[in-house]
Amino acid sequence: MKRFLKSGLVVLFLLLMLFGGMTLHTVSQSQHYSRLVNYVGIVRGATQRLVKLELMDQPSEPLIEYLDGILKELETGDGEYGLPLPKDSNYQQKLAGLSAMWEEMKVQISAYRNGLDDGTTLLSLSETYFKQANDTVFAADEYAARCIQGLNVICIVMLIIMLLTWLFIIWAYWKKLLHLEDTNQKLNDLARRDTLTGVYQLDAFKEEAQRYLDAGHDGKIAFVYTDFSDFKYINDVFGYAYGDSILKRYGEILNRLVGEGELCGRVSADNFVLLLRYQDREEVAARQREADTEIIRFMHSSHNRQSVPTCCGICCVEDVVEDLRIDGFLDRANFARKTVKNGTHSNYVFYDESIRNRLREEKNVESSMLAALENHEFTVFYQPKVELGTGKIACSESLVRWKSQSGSIIPPDRFIPVFERKYMIDRLDQYVFEEVCRFLNGRLKAGRRVLPVSVNVSRLQFFDQNFVKRYVEIRNHYQIPAELLEIEFTESIAIDNTSLLTSIVDQLKQAGFSCSIDDFGKGYSSLSLLKTLPIDVLKIDRFFFSESNDPERDMAVVQGIVELVHKFNIRTVAEGVESESQVEMLKQIGCDYVQGYVFYRPVPQAEFERMLDGQE
Ligand code: C2E
Ligand code: CA
Ligand code: CA
Image (cartoon, rainbow, N blue to C red; front, side, top):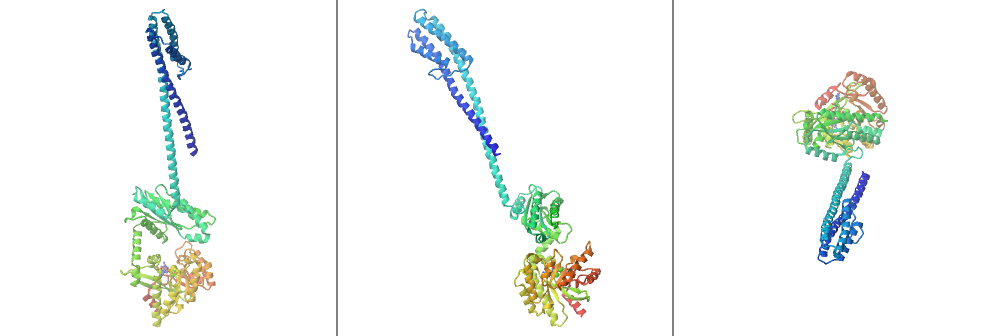
């Protein structure tokens, strides 16, 4: 392009020079030609004057010499007047006639001077001469006019070339400006993109998306929020470089997926957002599915051959009744995404009426949870754990419930995540712990039978340095023997920070608490962790006992886990067991306890107390 511009400019410049030269030449030529016309005219006039003077007997030799000089220069081009020598046959012919007549005139003048003519012949000859001179002037004039016409043509061509040159220069500059602007835009765009994945950074995505929303939209717009389930697994097991390569490829796939007027951005680690346009909402899901299939194929084709599923929430702007800004739409798409993880079969969910209600419910939880804590609206249920060896209740797990002011019981999965998100879970956990201590204290004081109770502790509490100290204080306050209390926590914290988990478990053990790992087998679990962590109990997740394609295989895995952890003197609890046949198998495997509906559901304290008293 640059070369083309340069050579184009050179050609135009040369043409301009050429035509400029031609113009200068023609202008100077035309000056000569007008002089030519003048001098031929002078010849005509001066000859008339000469004849007149001769007839008045006032002969003028200088005038004759003057006319001789001019005519000679007209014929030869040599002389002092700077007259041209046009190559025009008509003019040449007329001039030759004129010169010949001039010679005749001079002979006749001499005859008149010598008295051989009374002036009549000279006068008549001068008449003819005048006519010839006139014709010569016209011929010269015609010739000059033709030259000037040529000059006009040259000038017009020049003008066109100049115009073209300017247009070319302007076009070239315009192009260059556009190119600069384009480059500028590209650089700007690049600065707003995520370096790893090439999609927009969240702020830039929001800004652009809001612009699209503000501009109004002829088509329909949907926001998609995508997530990889358990991406940590990929990072932890295969390393961050592999994790990054997946995210990078996913970014490429999504960038290819979005077309004109659509956007793609990265929220954080493995969360992406899209703005897509559609006619039929199924299109949105289909396009997203295509992207997901591609990334899963990529993961399978890598040397690790392991994939984690993706899930996404879709919020169509037309489905939202409120007047929202971009954050509101992304929140709703994200909220819809979370409901995928909560057990739906398809890997995407559209934001709809039911989700809107759940969102409203969450918002209600959020706004009333603090007051609910202060009003003691939370109550503790107990779910017995049955020792398989004896068939009797050996201990129990405390499970929180929210008894709302309307009297309905709200299950924990509706509010625990909100408490965690708002960093208020420690208050709720401690509240439950204190309720359990109060319950045990009451029975101990009354001399009634007590069994160990486990309490759930959110992993977020482990980041609080005073956590163990505070639990010990509460326990001491209610004078509960250490062996009656067990702390349940999930191992997920170990993914981020094994040393923190180990240190907390050490502190809990030193303080006399039993420790158990909850939900083992949900997500990915690390057997090696069990070797190093001084825990007492392993709770095998209900996933192994729920409906399965291959229950025998599940039981074989459970058997493997039970046998292994027994070697480390860790007792096992099978959670979520619902059938007698499973209980039989667990007995054979040697599992220690069963906590499941097959024996007992979580029950209110009063009912649990009746069970305890009844079993005495
Ligand atoms: P989790 O710790 O795994 O508790 C066991 C859950 O499994 C309980 O649900 C229990 O009702 C349910 N379950 C027990 N047996 C069966 C069965 O045979 N079939 C089925 N389908 N389910 C069974 P729940 O009470 O709804 O609690 C849900 C989760 O909420 C708990 O899971 C725990 O993670 C959390 N949670 C409950 N109370 C607290 C608490 O005080 N603090 C914290 N941080 N989390 C709590
Ligand atoms: Ca638990
Ligand atoms: Ca559990």
